[in-house]
Amino acid sequence: MISGTPPGHVPAIELRGASKVFRTPSGASHTAVRDLGLTVEQGEFVAVVGPTGCGKSTTLTLVSGLEEPTEGEVLVGGEPVTGIRPEVGFVFQQDAVFPWRTVLSNVTAGPRFRGVPRAEARERARDWLGRVGLASFADRYPHQLSGGQRKRVALAQTFVCDPAILLMDEPFSALDVQTRALMSDELLELWGGSHGGPAASVVFVTHDLEEAIALADKVVVMTAGPATVKQVFPVRLPRPRKVEAIRLEPEFVEIYREIWSSLGEEVRITRERGASRVA
Amino acid sequence: MSLESVESVGAPIAPTAPAVGRASARAKAARQRRLTVYAARVLVLVVVLVAWELMARNGVIDPFYFSMPTRIWDQIVQWTLHGTPQGSLGEQIWYTLYEALLGWVFGVAGGVVLGIGLGRVRFLADVFSPYIKVLNALPRIALVPIFLILFGLGPASKVASAVVLVFFPVFFNAFQGAREVDRNLVANARILGASNRRVTLQVVIPSATSWIFTSLHVSFGFALIGAIVGEYLGAAKGIGLLVSMSQNTFNTAGVYAAMVILAVVALLAEGLLTFAEKRLFRWKPGDSGSGE
Ligand SMILES: Nc1ncnc2c1ncn2[C@@H]1O[C@H](COP(=O)(O)OP(=O)(O)OP(=O)(O)O)[C@@H](O)[C@H]1O
Ligand SMILES: [Mg+2]
Image 1: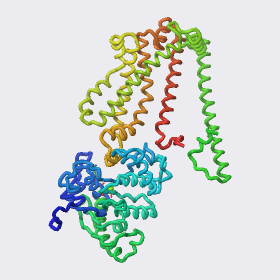
Image 2: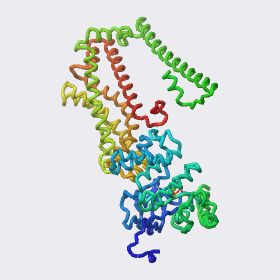
Image 3: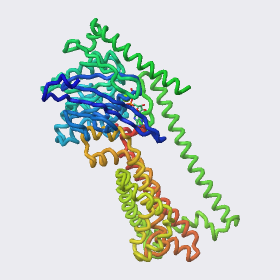
Image 4: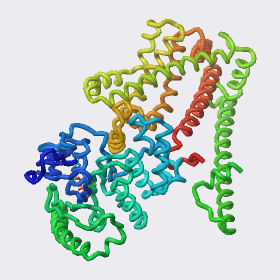
């Protein structure tokens, strides 16, 4: 794995034998992630799929620096992660917009925390609100929005900071099909470096296998929890892609079938475990 | 008109004729109901006052101990028109209010700062929590005589009494509020680049404000109690002194009159606080005045 890389080449994200053990309230320990090895190259788009509860979100918190691995190493840009880095953006699975701030103020939060002057932060925020289709909702409070609209606020909030490393935890799962396709294309455009800078490196967690294949350069399948990498499938569909059109390519269908059988097995294991625990 | 529009915020109204008719009917019913509630409230008050008056006049209860509404009213009128033995009535109210407010402000400021601080810094919480529990278990009202000896008969001793009564409920609520902040919000703020200070100021404090506000309502009452008890035990001015003077001259009407005045003052303060709260929590769901 490492032998093939030329000297001086630094992957954007690298996990080496990373494990995360949580302490449960009852005092027992719970292994969420075990011996995880994963490499994300500069500008690469990696989709992660796996059964529910296997440890995908935990993996992202390790990369973000919000949590430290119990064992092993997490490297970002070749350096061990010791805290939160400014180039990392994270779209959380749960609602995390600030309820006491208006939509506009939520989107300006990132730039303002980073010391961007107010006027410029507002301008950038308005631009992003337009892109996620919320321009006319700027002065609403989050509780006055629908779930999908709140999610789009979260997306704008992350994208406005121009992250070089983008961690996304099921970002589109609350959106309707049309908006989802629109946001996927928008995401591909942003990632493609339409801003003039180098492409962002993306880790994209999803339950939607079609979405994973349509977006990613490679799809990582995780095992039932504690998660480790089961298989990595490169996706060699040509770019630029349009998410809606690409689903119909024969190659797409082929790879979909492959990944589905690999993932299906883990999902079945997870389900059986859940059932036996209830019984 | 404005009342009607507030009433109808909850239901989206389609601009068709039957829907408009139904909505206005519903608004009318709601208005009707509210009027009935107000009428019933007034009725309860009148019944209680009349019963009190009649029982006192007919000797069912001893007016020496229980006084009667008309006498209490006469006492308030007399104080208002001719002043109290220790100066005008307004001056007494102002003194008590001033001591209570000052004590409340100090108590709230201390409670909020320490509560948030201990809620945020684990080490401080671990060190101080047993001492705070002990202090909270003390009957703090018993400290009032000590404050009188320490700070004299002036306002300082009353302010101190109000502070010790106000501090603890505010402190515990602020502490709890800081502890219960949604972890996702903190994580999000940190990812977006917020420093620790920013997280405290812009995430922890806003989410703890609803906790703090619940304690503010109770604690203003406590501040008044602190000031009154302090005045009662020894002062040159204030409503508490009015109570003790009336008591010493066996003027029960005076004692009740002072209590009525206090209740009005407390209700006004409560109203102001609710108003401030409404303005501050526009971002919360379920608030009919949702910013529009
Ligand atoms: N703070 C925590 N303390 C204890 N256990 C935790 C904690 N966070 C997560 N876990 C456990 O770790 C496992 C992995 O959780 P994680 O959130 O990473 O799953 P996931 O793969 O993101 O699932 P989903 O697809 O449903 O979002 C779960 O079994 C969960 O119960
Ligand atoms: Mg998850």
